[in-house]
Every structure is written in structure tokens, then in C-alpha cells.
Length: 194
Image (tube, rainbow, N blue to C red):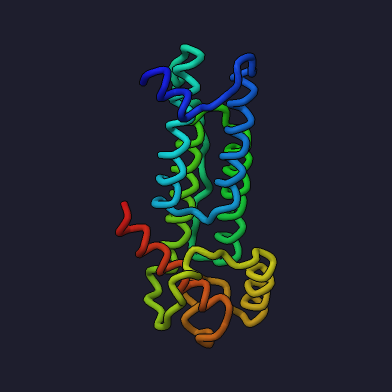
């Protein structure tokens, strides 16, 4: 990278505190990632753009990228819908906190990889149901309100259902049935990206 390239990707004024500027840009970048639904393709686009900013910053301050220090064990999922939903969200919240606190691009890459793994591990449970129906393509990446899903799961449990495999017993317009289709479509889409 040349100085001109670095200035193109990391513009600043003479006298600016480069570390403070980078922290501001890193914060903005992480905020974007926190609100998007997990998607390998989308993550790659955002990472590609920010890598140029990060590389330029490192060039300007004459430093090199440090290895990721992120290490976390994700909870695994089982057939119980209520417990799997709880564990999925626990993982998601822990990962969002890690992303918020990530200080390097490599840490961000590691957390995004774990966020995808969490989503894949959860959605594969529903892909195995082979439910009939479809959802508009643009809603596949749109996650439903977590409180609505929680309420639907409670209703599911009140009806005497507890296992993910029992979703096939629901009406096709039921929120959980529709969410199972969305998750299985998301999984199929991600499987073809990777």
C-alpha cells in the first residue's frame, strides 16, 4: 500500500488523532453489523470495504494487524424448541456483546464467523422438517420480533407441543410454521454461498 492509497481509504486532516479517528470508524462499522441479519455474503461485502480502512490505518500508524483473541463456546441446540430458542438467543446476545467490544478487524471476523455458525446450527434444525410453503425472498433475511416468537413458542407449549419436529402439526399460517420455513430457506441460501 502506498501513502496515497492509505489517504484515499483513510482520509484525515493534518493533526488529527488517527487512533481516535479509527476507533470512531470502527464503532460505526460495528454498529452496522449489529443491526443486519447474519449473512455470509453481506458480511463479506462489509468486511471487504472496512479492510481497506483498517489496512490504511495500520499503514499510516506503521502497525500490523494482531491475531484475534476471541474464544467462546456456543451453546448447542436440541429438539426442544423452547430451550433451543433460549440458547440461540443467549448465544446471539453474547456474540453481539463480543462484537461491540471487538477492537480489531480480526476480532470482528472471528465474531461474525461465530454469529454465522450460531445461525446455521439453529436453522439446520428447521431445514430437516422439509415443510411445504414459501416466503418472499426479501423476508428470508428479516428476522421476526423475538418477543412475538417467544409468545408463539409459549402458545405452542400450551397446546402440548415441545419438540421442533412437532411444528409440522401446526397450520401453515402459524407464525412458528412460517418461521421454520424462513429458517430453512435461509439455511439453503447460506449453504450455496459458502
